[in-house]
Length: 86
Image (cartoon, rainbow, N blue to C red; front, side, top):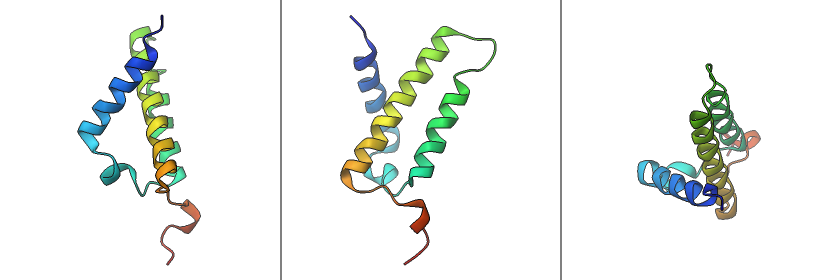
């Protein structure tokens, strides 16, 4: 049985403890989310390759993607093309 779902849930809770939810996640644009996730993806392919590091980064990316989807569900992702207008 895979431990991935449990590890992603634990990582998401860790992120919430560190950053909070609405206070940090809300207001990010779709570009912000993509950049944050891409940054973690880029760190996952550091050399020399280490499977433990790669797995840890994939868990972090999964939890970040979950956070982005949760922000969408709350209606709090800001359209990057609209930022600064108002």
